[in-house]
Image 1 (cartoon, one colour):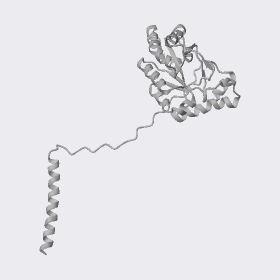
Image 2: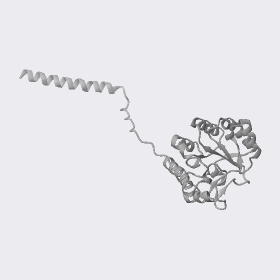
Image 3: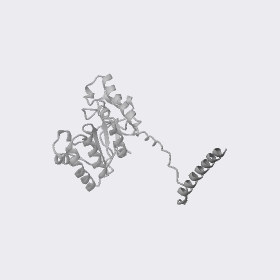
Image 4: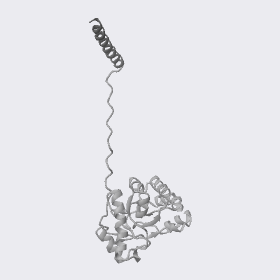
Length: 255
């Protein structure tokens, strides 16, 4: 009986000691601690914009309105992604928004580039799956080049992209133009200024070639993957600014 009473007293004493310790620990706080916020999954990005029809514009677009001081710098998406990221960073520093026509196989190898382009405020389109001479292909093969790249874009961004540009050609053949429309692209995007940067002529030559031809409404063809283009871009943007021209996406150019 005495042993039982002693064990009960010890248990009661231990409980009192724990309660006292908790009271002492909390005594220095004005309010109880705020519980940590539960972890949440960030929302998925909104789907990228898709193609638009521009009434009154031809099925194959080479330039925008000449009445407004805007131009579109359009880039063939391929090559070293580090060079592409450097070019995007230069464009963003200069306040330019670009149109990137991506090769599907390039997106397969570097899928993160799709969101990098869109997150920078630029637009993304379709430049075929393998970047072969699409105008020389049979109908089924040419259509697969367009739709395979469109599928890649939809998987990565939620849309087939804003524009289609044929590969290895400035303009689409009548057949390729019809196939692009069947795939969901109301217009084919061509250009009126060719920078020739893919010939690696040096940054000063790229700058001269573009600035000699560019005007209100111009659509300029440029490329990712070339150091000359990255080096020429800051001076090109400075020259556009001097002339009062603003570099916008092709969709903005036509809106």
